[in-house]
Length: 451
Image 1 (cartoon, one colour):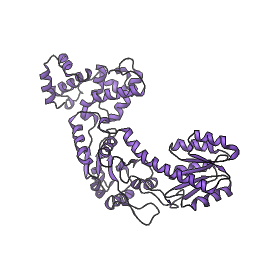
Image 2 (image 1 turned 30 degrees about the vertical axis):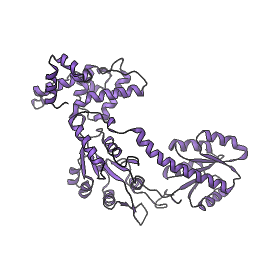
Image 3 (image 1 turned 90 degrees about the vertical axis):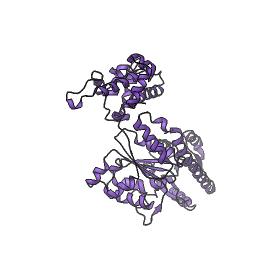
């Protein structure tokens, strides 16, 4: 039971001491706080299994503490302590999401049984939460829209590597869908029912990132009031996704390399290592080979991560997918706004296809969501951001520099994409607009590898 930590919140020192001795005597770790304010700090920094709080305290009371803890973690288990005369308040707490309540003076065995029941409930929460997170989100291929050859090759590679435990390195510009691909690998693997945990290696300071990844022991640093498993161990049986791996500090890269080589981690403050069983998928928008040459990234770690390499194409490299994505995001916006779907006008689709999308799919989704809100019965050019709008007037106009002038073949390819997008990929309608036979259209599409 030592892996479970109970937080006791009580402003009376004697009662706090009694509760600590009682609960520790049953084999649990206990951390305590003399106010709701300090309890919130402890809760945010540690893995708390159950919180036991008095209902009447100076400052923030137990009811408001319950609300704030639930705001941090809606599945948190909170037990309310109250005097017999305040049972009505305890019942109100149950309505707000408290797990249970005990009345003071309490029977020791009853309190401990309540804690035991809450622990069992927490274990069920942890198992079911991982399943719900993956099954309800449905991060499958249906979430990755496109029929371009480059994307189909990625799909095929995902299916090949999903059934293995090989480490995967996904490279691509920001917004190309690296986490979606990582989730697709996970959900098509034998680990699909286990956790998929993700961390952005560039978003946390080095000291915090180390603790998040490898865990820490109680007392290893100020604020470490309980043991923490860390993501490597928490993801055991499942997948750990290391996003923006190129931003990881060099000192941590050494520890990550050892973890990958030995399949074990040493928590901060510990003297012994602990095994883990998590598949590792890493992603970056940087050129790691260039970073290796510049001594910004360890060469041995690069090769350890780069067992299976996936390079995601930018959106400008698969423009034929833009009409499909635009309609997908327009339909998604309609659902989120509880409104009727809107078509994308021909001029608007031309502007979308010819814009370079430096932010890739993420930028396109934001542009469509904005346009859906601002437009009338159809999504038109005027509802787009200015930088996208500008493309409507120069949809097929070449740049002044001859080096960038498209060939006639390229101009024809772009025009075919534009017309197909304007008619919802209805090839018969497109052929009629173009004034060619349907068989001719298919031959052209095949030549341009658009089908």
